[in-house]
Length: 283
Image 1 (tube, rainbow, N blue to C red):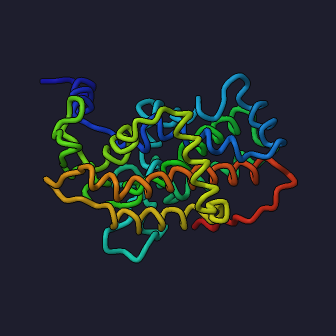
Image 2: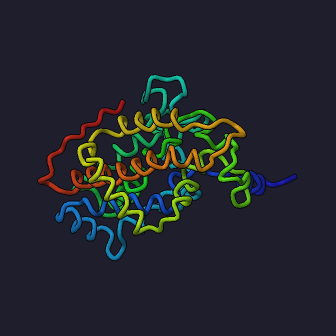
Image 3: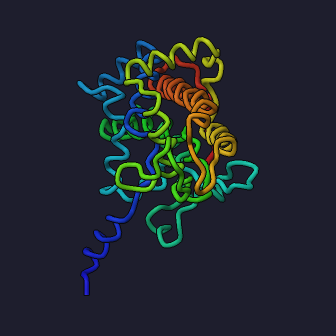
């Protein structure tokens, strides 16, 4: 018989985690946010990060998930397909068997953004707590703008197997809808990080997205939830050039808004003179 630890290792070898945007997506969001920070907040960020920048810490929350398993559910929110929208009591509860470790039903990206913004803005919190809060915020604000992170259907699209630009295998695994939005569509642009950021900054000006750089995490989750219904594929469907042309503009808009809204969150958490507009109410 296998020991329990061996069984766990075996199970993890078959488990494919549902990350948010891939590394490039997270770095691009962080870069856009950096461009829209106030001068005072840039100084505060430098004090917390030292020689690092927002892009360099943007994937930290994914990298520590194995050693911090309680954070797994913090990356997404499972809104049912036919729901009217986000419900904290329904969508942020911890899974059965984990509620002794994850109390108070804050087991979703919406609540965790609120929690970590409050920690970051608390000048009496320890430097280590505020640094960790910053790292989580940079990641989670991006995650909530990934449409597949706002739907419970098929584990956020992880169980929807598709063909991706003619391929049914992506790396060593079958292509799936969640991974398409994490990585596949972004990679298909063939833009590297800096040109992608330039492209998004042009989009922000062209589409006046600065006027939409507000709201609450719940509102952002609802936007992603509505969007996922527009871009959904079913098992066996193809993400081809036609799908790409119809949806890459939506994806780019989500990346740009994520960057602007991350900047807004950091500005109001770290700049005492910034007008605070966001209010949270968690049960």
